[in-house]
Every structure is written in structure tokens, then in C-alpha cells.
Image (tube, rainbow, N blue to C red; front, top):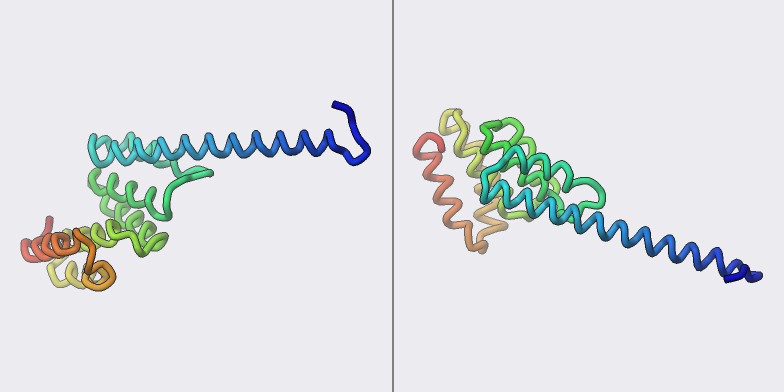
Length: 160
């Protein structure tokens, strides 16, 4: 291919390079998606929390396919299962900030605060905003009634 007066060869090379770049990004996004799915499986099915945290660190790198807050939600779940309530709370709150419309973060925050070691009145006050959101914004969600029942059980039983 020769060089024409309007730089056709350079333009063709630019289009090829751009296409290769897009292919690489697509391949990386697919890899991140697999890492995210694997981490979710490790948290929810295998209870391999430390391994999941490693994958979550990888899955959130650019270009991450994750919806806002999902990586932080899975991190929170893993840290809670590992007994690290401080980190779990931090990541639940980050997940909620990133996507206030994600039911599971709100549900887990209500359960999280209802299950603390503090006196019941302190726990009820901490859980109250999430209970209100479950009763309002998420009133029609299929899991709301059961989640609210579990929250009340934890508040009445003095914890988890």
C-alpha cells in the first residue's frame, strides 16, 4: 500500500490501531467480568473470603464491568464473614453511596446494624434509616418482608 496525497496509509494504520485498542479493552473487560463472577461465587458459595478479596481487587481495576457499588458490596460481605465489622461497615457504606438503589446493600446494612454488640436502642437507631428505606423505597421488593422480619428478630434477640 503506497502513501497517497491525503495520508490514506496513515489513516488506515490509525483505524487498525484503534480497532486493536478496542479489542484489548473488550478482552480486559471480559477478564474483569470473569474475576467478578468468580469472586461472587467464592463469597456466596465457597465461603473462601480471602481468595475472593484478591479477585475483587483485580475485578475493580479498569476497565471494570461491575455496576456501581457491587465490588464494595462483595468486599463487605467477605469482611463481615471474616469477623471484621469495621471494614465490612466501611464497604457496605461505600456500596450504598455508589448505588443507593441496590436492595441488597440496604438490606444488609439494616441487618448489620441490628446485629451489633451495642444496646438495643443504639442498634435500633443505627438501623432505622435502612429500615425506613426498606419500608419505603423497597416496599415492593420480594425480599423486603423477610428482611424486615429478620431485622426485628435480631433487635429483639439482642444481636445476631
